[in-house]
Amino acid sequence: IMKDTDYRPNLHFTPEKNWMNDPNGMFYLNGVYHLFYQHYPEGNTWGPMHWGHATSKDMIAWNYESIALYPDEKGYIFSGNSVVDKNNTSGFGDGTETPIVALFTYHDPKGEKDGRDDYQTQGLAYSLDKGKTWTKYKNNPVIKNPGIKDFRDPNIIWNEAHKQWVLVLATYEKTMFFTSKNLIDWNHVSDFGEGIGAHGGVWECPDFIKMKVAGTDDEKWVLIQSLNPGAYNGGSGTQYFVGDFDGVKFTPEPYVNSLGEKHDFWIDFGKDNYAGVTWHNAPNGRTLFIGWMSNWEYANVVPTETWRSTSTIARELKLKKLDGKYRIFSSPVKELQNYIEKSISKEAIEVSNSEVILTKNEISLSKTEVSFEIPTLKNNDYKFLLTNAIGDSLTFGYDHSQKQFYIDRSKSGRVNFNEQFAEKTSIAPRISNEEKLKVTLLLDKTSIELFFDDGASVMTEIFFPKNPFQEFKALSNQSFYINNLNARELKL
Ligand code: FRU
Image (cartoon, rainbow, N blue to C red; front, side, top):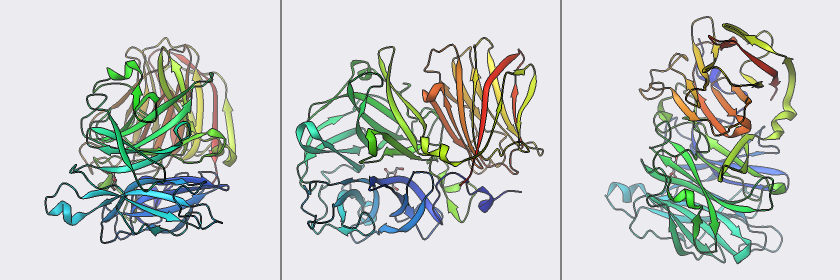
C-alpha cells in the first residue's frame, strides 16, 4: 500500500521536507532558473511563512538551496516576486553585482489577531549574490496598507515603453497597479477588476506580463489573476485577462469587460494549479510558468506526511487569437524532452469496447508523457482510465456532445481525507474547433496534467492511489481510432 515517501513524485518539484504552497520570486540569470516558494520548514501544514529556494538549469531537475527569507518582527513572508535590476535603478548594486530585488508581503499575525485591517504591507529585500543571500531593506515596508484587509502578493515588471517599473497587487476584489522608477517609491496609479471575471473569493497572486500574439507582430498585456475560492471547478484557480497598458491603466479587450462568474479564460481548468506566475528575465522572450499543484480546499490534509505539496511541471505559455479572443495555450517546457529514457509508439489503435493502450510492463505509468490523436470526433464520449488490480481508477475523457473534457477521481484511491476532493467530476470546455483532437498527458505518481488541443484546454489534478496504476485503457460504446500514440518515459 502506497503512502508518503512512495508518493514523492518522479518529475515534479516538492519541498525536501514539510510544507510548501505558492511559487515566489522566480527569476532567471546566467543559465540558472531560481524558484522560491511559500514554505513552513517546521511543519507539514501551513504555518509562519518563509521563502524556500531551489535552483535549476532547465526548470526540470531542481537543487535545494538554503531558505532565502525568514519571518521577522514585521511578520511572515507571504508571496511576491523578484526582478533582475540590470541598470541598478534601485541603487542597491555595488558596482559589480547586478542586484536582484524582491517585493513580498509582510503578514503581521499579531495585527490580524488584534482585528486590525492593515496587517499586510509590502516589504523589499535584495540580493547581491544572485539570489543566495538576501538583505531586507532598512525602511520596510515600501508600500503601507491603506486599510484593506487583503492587500498582497506584489509582482513587478519593467515597462520599457514608459521607462518604469509596474507592480500589480491583489486587493480582495481588484488588482491595484503601482509604478516606480527605483523599486522603492511606489505610486498607486489605477485599479482593474471590479465586476469583471470570477469573484467567488479573494483575488491573490497577480502577474502582469507582455506576450507576443502567435503568428503576428502584435503584443498584448496579460493579467494572470488567481482566485480562491470560486474557481471553475471550485476552490482555487487562476484566470487571465488580456488587454493593453498605457503606462497607467490596464484596458482590457472589449469582450473581457463582459466576462462574468462562469467565463472560460482559465490557465488551467483542473482543481490543482494555483497561484502560478512566470519567470522574470526568461531567455529568448519565452513566457515560462509554474504553479502550485494543490487547492486550498484540501492542501493541508492530502495524505503525505514528511512533505506536503508539489509544483506543476514548468510550462511555456503562448498567446493565440481564436475567434476574436485571445487565448493562452500551455505546454510542458521543451526541456522535459531531454530526459527521455525510453519511448514507444503505436499506430491506429482501434477501440471498440474496452482497449488496453499501455501497460506498466511496456512503459512506466508514473513518469511518462503520452501523446495521441483522435482523427475525427464523431462519438459522444471518449473515456480513458488509469487502473490497478485493487480497483483504483482515475477516469478522464471528452464528452463531445457537451464539448467538455472531464476528470473523475472519485475512485482513484485515497479520497476521503476531504469532502470536496472527489465529490464532483471536474470539467473543462473545449476551446478549439479543430476536427482532430490532440491529447498530451504527463503522468507522475500522484498527478495528471492534461493538455488538450496543443494546450488550449488544460486540466491538472492530483490523486493518491493505494497501489500504483498498472494499465492505461480506453473505453467506448462506439468504436474509434487512436492515432500516432507515442509514450515517452522520462528519467530524472
Ligand atoms: C495564495 C496565498 C497568497 C499568500 C500566500 C500565503 O495561495 O494565500 O495570497 O500570500 O498564499 O501563504
